[in-house]
Amino acid sequence: MLTAEQITNILESEYLLETAPSIDEKTEFTHISYNSNDVRANTLLFIKGYFKPEYLDEAIAKGVTAIVALDSFVHATSLPTWSVNDNLAAMSVLSMAFYDYPQNKLALIGITGTKGKTSSAYMAYEILKVATGNKVALSSTLMSITGPKPENQRRAHLTTPESLDLFMWMREAVDNGMTHMVMEVSSQAFKMERVYGLRYNVGIFLNISPDHVGENEHPTFQDYIEHKMMLFDHSEQIVLNTDSQHFSELIEHAAAAVPRDGLWLYGQYDEEDNRADVSFETVAANLQGSKFMVREENQQAGRLRIGGQYALDIPGDFNESNATAVAIATRLVGADTEAIKEGLAVVQIPGRMQMMTSKMHGTIYVDYAHNYASISALLQFVRKNETVDQLRIVVGAPGNKGVSRRPGIGQAINEGADVAYLTADDPQYEDPAAIADEIQAQITADTVVVKREMDRTKAIEQAIREAGPNDVVVLAAKGLDEYQKIKGVDTPYENDWVVAQRVVAELEN
Image (cartoon, rainbow, N blue to C red; front, side, top):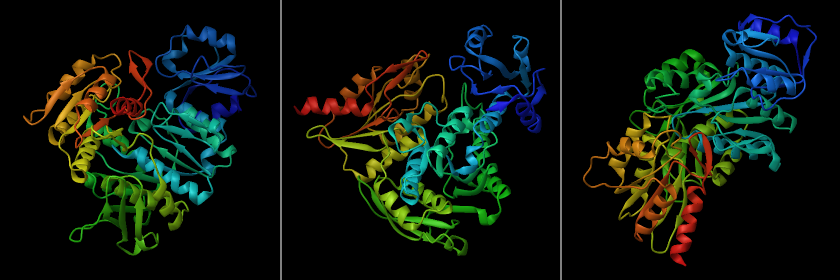
């Protein structure tokens, strides 16, 4: 619950208030919303994004009694209105107050990076499940989990949810007895102020490479990296990858944000040039997982007491890097070494590096890899660990977002694949064939065969049917998504894993 007086005071204290309505200070609001369809009696409605004034009529009839809006919207209604200079920041600070600041009762780990956020979040989640007796919540690209019961698990629609939803789920997590929470934090979360006013006990910065530049996202790469680095400014301690691109810029910002004993550097072991506090090195690896050694390289790292050998139940040296970051972060919020070992040994990420084999049509991987960095790493990993006659990839790119990643997808194919099946991947309002043209423009190697089929199901069927017994087929980007975003509608889709399973069963039966 919030009173009118509390709303005014909070907005004034955050320098967000332009004008307050003439309303009884004791007026109570027992529900808050940013969706005119989610309204009940005594609702405070936040006006965000594109909102037609006529939508208010129906919302008022359902129980909206006041709104928070930018000054430009105020003239559209006679409702009591708090006029603010930043409606998204206002929604965040009022939402955390409405739900009684649940973040203060949770040990928070925030994870950002161009690739690896979801895998790392699930690793941290599994470790902390062991360490806390299953008292950890999760906010990821795939799922929001606020407790142990099925009704506490939801499919996610944003990497980081809207601030109102985030604080509502945090409150639900606290009420369910959760003591820790792991969050993916996207650059858009900072740009759109979904985490405005939130601080993390530990922030993990995995890596950075060009992505999310284009319409409706970041205008430039510099804007992208600056919003990523905002995690540094909102974390008590920072875990940073020394192997990341743009490390000099990252370390400069991180070092200004926290003292040195709150900055934890990790990276791949390098005997000649090791800047890391904690390093990792592969001991053994195959297509099912790996064993790797973690070393504490200095006195600061020795305080962690996490050195030793670990087993990871998902493949790829890039996942060993993520696991090392997570080991540091979870240790900083109370996990012991045994919990870290147990969590990493059993972790599975839905739709990440899922593998099936067929009798006559090779090995099929399903993965959410969706940009140059992740697709390139995946293809290189397969080349390194498989005997491959032909490496085939089925891939597309989303419409109306991430335009900058399309050439990178083509470049990754050019460097690592033998056959590419270009297809649809959430085309939205764009023509998937035109998107495929942008990807194909970067595939210049004579050794790469390009095929085009805009029906994703048919493209997967074709790729698997044409694969030989020693081929590998990579189904990239969609993972377990059960829809295609087409013209603003989430259109039902089996998902890549289900399609692959069905095709293999048909071929083998």
